Image (cartoon, rainbow, N blue to C red; front, side):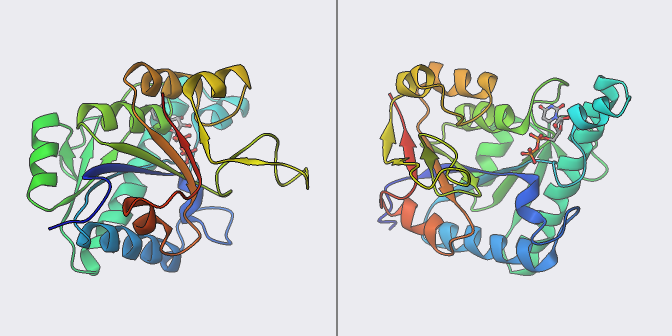
Length: 238
Ligand code: UDP
């Protein structure tokens, strides 16, 4: 039986996490390493769902800044998340895992539609589930999709992988004296105006008391160590 601190988790990866040293697209070595880490966590006994952003391909806000209609741009962004999800599904299956992409927008020649009960069933059957297309509507982000799906499937924890190893009082890339928080309450995040997730996603998590852990996925092995209960990164909870 699993000796883990968490039974069911949702891991949010940004699209940029797949780029490696490139400035666009997917680096096969990087997605393969991430897939390894996810399988390692699942093999230890956790049910793992994933949400992957699309920022390595398109973001609606960026396309709109270039003159495109925002809703069309967001739809392209959502399709970008489907592309990343399919790439992750492939990487996971190449390594012997079973995985299913479920999309919030109907595109069921390439993946399943998101159906909550079916998603939970996949997890119970030992499949990894990748939720694509965010919440399925423009003007949202995959952070919101991650918070929403985590709540819907009853995840114990939403893990947000970032390029820094937690939440700091100021940008650690710009300030050498930046201090990392081990733990924060939802109210502290708001009162200190800290950037953890976008506002809509954070509000959802807070209202449902969904615990969040922000950590650096480029440190190999940390995902599993977190699931075993180690205090890595920053924990945000009530
Ligand atoms: N998007 C959207 N609705 C959603 C989720 C995503 O319209 O529910 C679009 C939006 O344009 C967003 C893009 O998809 O910029 C990619 O998602 P996101 O920016 O969250 O990706 P990340 O920054 O995590 O790579």
